[in-house]
Amino acid sequence: MSVPRALVLTPPTLKLTVPSSKHEWTLVQNSDKGRSSTDEKGEVKGSLADVDVEGDMVLGDMDPDFAEPFTSAKPKQVINTVREDAEEIVNDPLHLIRRRASKRSDSSPQHSRSQSPAKDAQSPERLMREHSIRTNRRNKFIECLLRDDVDMAELRKLAWSGVPNELRPLAWQLLLGYLPLPRPLRSSTLQRKRGEYSSLVELTFTRGREGLDQQIWHQIEIDVPRTRPGVRLWMHRSTQRSLERILYIWAIRHPASGYVQGINDLVTPFFQVFLSAYIDSDPEEFDPSMLPSTVLNAIEADSFWCLSRLLDGIQDNYITAQPGIQRSVKRMAELVARIDAPLYEHLAAQNVEFIQFAFRWMNCLLMREISVTNTIRMWDTYLAEGPDAFSQFHLYVCSAFLVRWSEKLREMDFQGIIMFLQSLPTQDWTDHEIEMLLSQAFVLNSIWQNAQSHFTGK
Image (tube, rainbow, N blue to C red):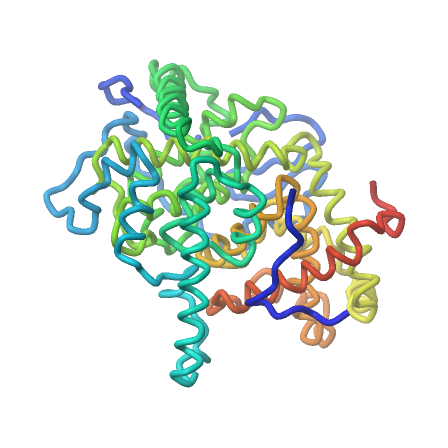
């Protein structure tokens, strides 16, 4: 079977008003025997003690002040990067799409920041043809999203090949089931869910740090400052306070798992995508404290609920002993043994166990291996694949990801393999590399999805 072209591959059609006083806080989980946990140095203990989760990440100094109230963000005088109609977008996500549609913008999925350098040498005719294709796809997206009742099958089919930037916030919320497909129900749903989150924040932090689970809070307090190191968005105080609230509230609402290291990374694509709806600049360089508090609160609440939707499908990755990850890593090893036997045999000969590198790939959904921009493009396809994609389809993506480096890995010894896999050369990856990876995973999924008898892992 030939591998389909990445840029044209299409899968089968798939059927807060909170206390005004300052609180002392910043976020973790009840430790259980036999489960993986972390100490302050980021070392994994317990049944997965040899697994490196953090890699070479450096723990930054925590701001001595604790998290601020939910509505503490104030708009600054310089707000030229904030869209003038941000408040309207808060109440009606379609407002942005209608405005963009009227301007006939020609943006494409991550086009401005991640197009392949090879495109610079393309002929004008080819560039015009690609421009026409992008415009046509974008118009189909707009037509789909503006319907009174969105066709989910059509939206998934369109989203599989990438969602245009300005349409992504609404598309993701629909694909996740956070917003209802019928348009008349969306405003009331947003108002209700954001109000629920605001109430959770008020109830949880009304007593400040004194009323928190100190073990959970302590681990989150360690992890938040080292989330997406080097990205300015996640260095800002207001962003870190939002992340702390999201993680802590999710943890106490899910006592079977609590907070597990790595969940902090999974918030970042949602926050960045939803932030992009309200600004006219690069989200990774933006200071969220420039936003009106109502906008920042909406982004935080939407990120919380969408994170919850995602984690509902992979929660067994984070419960005691993390059976979901153990199962996925075992199946990945079995799959690689069949699709690239020389690589599998070389890893075995060098005493490299898949859990030593693939644990992090499953736990953090490859977010430590690729940029947030790459992750966002990848999640377009995951969300289009359906609710099981973050567990099932991700298995095939990780397998294709490993096999991509097969030739280099087969020339390395144990130490070289581990060091290489902990610091992969993906810094310059664009949409092209991500789409090729997704294409290869799609082929593997098509071949092996219904061949469960070939897997010994259950």
